[in-house]
Image (cartoon, rainbow, N blue to C red; front, side, top):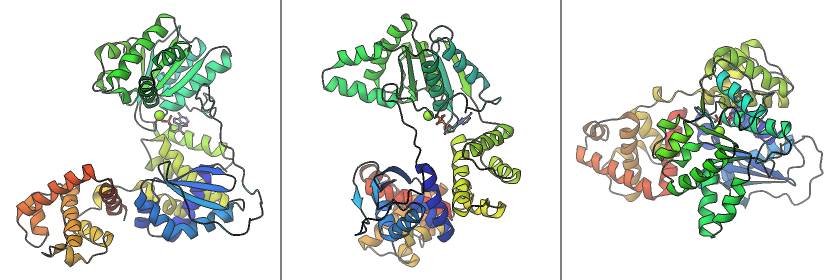
Length: 449
Ligand code: ADP
Ligand code: MG
């Protein structure tokens, strides 16, 4: 079991025991970020969620984890990557049972490549055929056929996989070539810190010694002028020396805002390949291949259910599959269609159908532990005013309600009250991270029931 599978196994159990709303609110965007020497670290999106998970679900989470792997002694929660806090430490060291095997792939420190991404496990369909063929050709003859190679497509559709497969193939075909994969954001951070530390020369030398440079998600260079300039020079040096450059983005070069013209025209100067949305047959093929990798197989009916419900994101297809694999591993049997539906329900929510004024007001009231009528009252108490303003703000934001409409929904208040509330919250959201987390959690609750 990988960390991902282990966490999915925990989620699968928790999901069966709590409401969908709670599940979506507290467990969305959580993951295991490390598992070392019996200590698990779970990343959560914000400190609010951290507190809730620790206090309300900490024991349950620990129990489930411990049942899955007796080596687990500690569970910690962290917001982003910092701020660690122990929530449970049993007094006696527990015997190790070594139940589960953790086979995380090691990322190569030199190249930044993850060996799990290969051409062998990249499924080809009409939507990515061209991008795949170009990447394949570039891996066979780096620097000679398509230079630069620019791949674009939406989130979770295989850009990173393809780029890394290309890099891994080059290393396999030409062991002496220097390959380097780097997300554009990290490249930017490198430029910034080199400027700060006055070692720009080292930075330049390092990049200009590369044979195959892979820059992922170049849309993040938008507006970063200094980084663009640096990359422009690196690009030219490599290009003139016939070194291969591969780029990816979530959109074509001409649609990247605030990108220097000279860089844009460089990006457009080679081969551009796009990745579209996978067709139904390919989605099923991907699900089959990924289940096979895990040593499980699901019925056609179940694969059809997933493939019909997730159409535009291969990462989400995998996420759904992970949940079912986890269920299968815990229970030693495949889920039937009904269980599949309940395991995956929270992945398929369609938000807009569920929101209405009553629901928003109720959810806000519940969140701040108030009565609905308190929110609707004229009370000037601080602990009521703020939630009321948040509720008004959400009516505006989620339902696009007019100000008079919002005023009416709050016991016939004037539209200027609604305007004031919405503007105030809008402004505070920019300055106050705590508030913006709260609002996000409320939004999730609104959409998850
Ligand atoms: P992107 O970079 O476009 O956001 P990723 O490359 O990270 O997407 O892909 C998301 C997940 O889907 C990865 O786990 C990847 O292995 C998988 N995936 C994407 N496309 C394919 C494919 N054609 N065949 C197999 N797996 C794929
Ligand atoms: Mg990516």
